[in-house]
Length: 453
Image 1 (cartoon, rainbow, N blue to C red):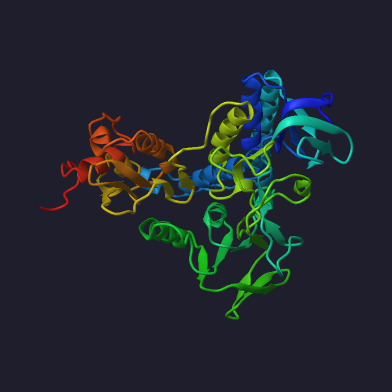
Image 2 (cartoon, one colour; image 1 turned 45 degrees about the vertical axis):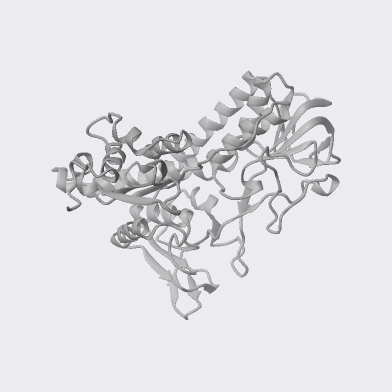
């Protein structure tokens, strides 16, 4: 199926209409190039339709439901509060549809030709669409993203689902076992626990094993309060229609089993063997700092080129790839790709807290007016700076941590010093003040927290 007429040739062909792909397509069109955007499913890809947006939509709903039920401290006493799974599903799907329609409008408004189908490379200069017509291009950008990794013995089907289907349920399941303990598992597990599901997480080592333990300990404490059971240091061995058996012999109740062990690059069936594109040992497409592959005519962006597998990284790379494909002297040279875990509390990170000569200062939310007023003191801000006081990293653990970390990203990218943050007036009372307070503390002039003499 083709949306609009299929052009015989374009300047730039983008394969994959996810966030990276449509950013690349629209920006290339803004640069005056003729562009075809090829997408086999929905514009916006996994982020808009199956992952980022749906998960954060449902997390917000779960938070509201949970807070209404636990608002006695504020003098609010609510009774008979319930969740209608079908109505929640309708809202979640409606949000994705609105955004998908918005992307379609933007593509059309910018003159991007959207082609519905699978793009298969026939050569370094041509693509076949869905086994039918072909389209020639001068440059191509691979933006096919990633797909959920499968687990042997727990293939998808029956009561075994991936994270996408876990975010498309029209009911609240009674019990759920999540295999894997990364941020996807934590986000899905927390939101369903707040909705009333009995959640178990099976972790080969531990929850969020690659993250700062100070932050993770707070998240695990909240998960325990919510009734989430974490089985650490074990692996899933087998399953049936109602349970999972672990490597230690324990059986865990499971109406649904969610496999969330990671993502794999989507390169199969693209015809890359007909090009000069090279893959690394893990199957990701190899690129240089200008996002060019080993094939002079083809670039690649986003999840398909490797870690970090984050939508906002793909967006930035889409812009850079469009400029490179259009002949501009551009490169992907960003210092910071922030990461946000929408847990409870949220964890956001920019830059690094490690390195020679780097000093880390921690400011607790127990000393922040905004956090005290909202009964949300379960968190902190850490700021890292070198011997010249140049900011190297920031970690925020709080409600809305993801909204605060942007300031840290700009600070690190611009080479800001602790004084730049500490001496800039932050609005009161807000969570953003915690970043200013952390910078003040790092300079030895903390006002609201006593660190000792």
